[in-house]
Amino acid sequence: MTEMPATVSSLTSLVRDPHRRERLLLGAAAPALALVTAFVLIAVVMAVTDQNPVRAFGLMLDYGTKADSQVWIINKAIAYYLSAVAVAIGFRMNLFNIGVDGQYQVGALIAAWVGGSLAFTGLVNIPLMILVAMVVSGFWAGIAGYLKATRGVSEVISTIMLNAIAGSLVGYLLKEGRLAELSGNIVHTPDLPDSSMFFTIDTGNGEIWGTVVIAVLAGVAYWFLLGRTRFGYDLRAVGHSDTAALASGVNVKTMVTGAMLLSGVAAGLVGMPILLNDSGNFGNNFPGGMGFTGIAIALLGRNHAVGMAFAALLWGFLERTGNHLDFEGYSREIVGVMQGTIVLSVVIAYELVRRWGLRRQQSRVGAELAAGRAKTNDAAEVGQ
Image (cartoon, rainbow, N blue to C red; front, top):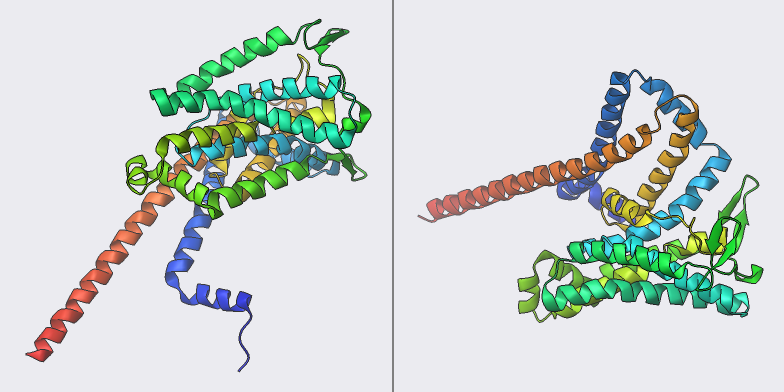
């Protein structure tokens, strides 16, 4: 007898298994509820402030689906996704790495200076800059990890303070005669040679940055390391219960330090798309704040490699179309309202669905136990 293909077999088991169907529906219900709630709240806010929400959503959809806008959104989402991955590594262990912003800026500055100062070919310079950025950012994050593991210092406080120190350090080093040079009103590191710029993909309506490959590889590495290795299992175990993890033989202090180091290493990649595909140097106009955006995107994507990708694209879509709304007479602040409302709705919706799922599971287990006791009693009566 011919065996059914694996895909057909899995679909059949999904249809027959009510528990799997329920888990699938719960997984789809949370984002659907969040998006519907968010757009309803946004529409109410816009209506209260005498702005037409229907026209606004129509303008956003029309402008965001244009080919050049799609290229812009993808390019913008690359750095956002890398930032979310860096944040999510800490989140999976219940560590809040608020310092991604400072970490990637310090790493990008040193990497840009190394790349602009050395006369290596692109085959050597590009990997060298990426490696330098990852090492410097990892070291910067490792400071907070060491303080957390050895002195019990909250990583939230230490990373926020390290952000301030990073900003001052960047400002000190980014001076003419130190690591930078003056070009008009912009102070920046030496320009990268043309051979050290990353490739682009010409779509006919704009160029997609080749660093999207780095983002894809980072996402795959994140999924594999945290979901398919012993290190990832230990990391998640410590996040759930450090005492239980310690009892099972996991070195909690080592995992805390390792998780922060790994988060910082990933943060070193955040500045690479701008450096290698856009600016070609690190100047006082280098974009900041992407570390904090990564926190929101990690929350939106629920720390899932694919979920964060969609969240990064959504964030880029909101920025692109929000700027267009500004030219159409809508308030500039409406984009911030949209972003904040979506994040808040996602957090609340997932928590509501999670609690409802737990209650359903408890009720089902209770019903199964009651049915089991009833069968036992019936069997006992028959035996008598």
